[in-house]
Image (cartoon, rainbow, N blue to C red):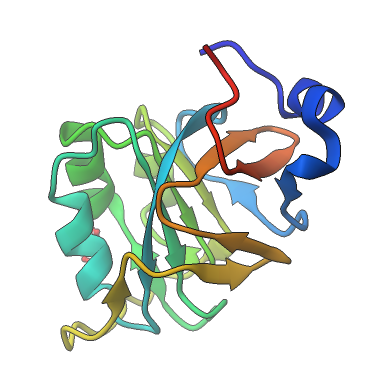
Length: 160
Ligand SMILES: O=C([O-])CC(=O)C(=O)O
């Protein structure tokens, strides 16, 4: 997968949605892209766990976790399940934990920060709805492109 977000921006300009630069990279892959699947949840990672246990088929899970810094929505076990199932990555508007292990995994992970506290699982959340954070709307089926410079969202695939 050979692309740079800066070059994609130069080619496609403001037809792309450009995320505000609030994310850090935690995964072993920094450059990743794919069709978007969405989850919306708050301090409850039930839907993150169940979605990443399904076949990923190279898609990217975008999690609107409300920007909470109070607990982690993704740890090494769920991240390992995402790798096993073939997800390209996770963009998480929230926190991760087990960051040392996640850094060694072939998975893209962009999130806000780390927190050792785990979330509660009450089975609450929503799936496959448009979500908005970091100044950008992420709709299921949109394409997302991530690298060390940031995150771009497009309505159509940009690469061959
Ligand atoms: O289980 C959780 O809630 C998060 C976690 O630590 C893991 O994925 O290993």
